[in-house]
Length: 606
Image (cartoon, rainbow, N blue to C red):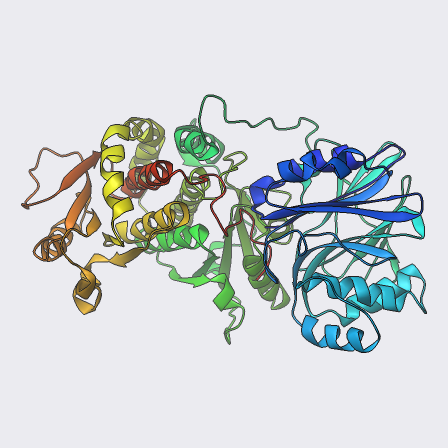
């Protein structure tokens, strides 16, 4: 969600900025822009749509300047068009911004009263004019300090100045921002992924900090304007190469990569020699934790819901699950014996980071389950469990979801072991089944033809339902979310046992309903609920696991069988057909599968 690049160099920067913006396309955006300084002027070019549109602009091809900023924008204030695209510039200042300025209306009123004229509908343009106003009486550092204090909300900023041809300012509150170091040039970026093609030496700004970036020197300041020292981190020098290969979309590739994702996670966390779980560095004693709260957004929230069932099944801990955007605004009663687990693919999800920050301020125990180990959530958590799934480009998460629930399941096993809630024999059997999981997922991936056939029915319907009980309920929610994200059709995930308490009124002749009914403890009850929707004319797609037992129901429209394993692990297998259903539904509609409309990979605003 929005991406920032800034480069201060001794050579022209426009082409490098464009290439770096392409590496930020995975975040989700609807417009792009670039601004450079040359001949004492700010040169700004912006376009609606993809970076390719920006690159084709003849003005970009002829852009000069050895200092510049670029941006891909995900619209919050104002329509996604070239006028509202970033950068936003006055005669003296140009700004790119990730985040939301909550008091922009009041600030704009003040600035209009001072004679400033606005061109866009954005909150960001307020920052431009506020800095311009403050520069009338202050030097750059003081004008930035004064501006930041006036802003309410979240921001990551990249700023250049007409009268300062060797200076970029970066500032952060809430939204992530990184600084990169290179030979005779330095960089600013919203994440390290876009900077890694240029450098492996990175510094991350903390909340409230800002920096002044020159070609050969970088200074850091806290929110009071006092100079501070920052650590330089060295990332892997090998730039990760990730392309679609022979696949039509990144999402298709990422679905097929899931057996490898699971193998990597199991290899990292399972000790084959001792048939044990390789998590030995938990920073708390077992008697220091009596409850767990799992926190996430979107797909990560569904991972948390899934984990709740496992923690309750495998440990004697009290378990709660919270949506991050709700958690931070409630009156939480923090307890010292609680562990708060934060789940995020990017590690930069704004609401989840804010919840973590609240927990840290209250002295709570915190753990991060993330895919990006250098992310804000990872850096600010006491304990980090990486999911090791590699770069995920598709906005609709697939392999990261399986990576998240894998690590959460392994953590539940470990805590059950440490607390004496799991017998050694039972743990050993569960680890054995876990090692077999990648092969079972690989076999389950071969269901393409049947999924392709049923996807048309979901496309043609005005809505659909996804039903499950117990371990299958969070997977039903995730399946409905995937269909919504990719095919733009209404889909509702619901506990199968709750149908008669309202949603049954929506069932009508021909409506497609996915019923997740694996042969687990909930099977017979779920089949009974399925009969209720069949009796009202629904077309039921039953997803279950292979078994010698016959399915005790009639009038089922279609049945898909996944492989069989113990009931703890069946959710991994049930997820696969739902991912493929969403993929093929979107494919038949001709939609942009890797970049669905209005959505972003890394949600860095509230």
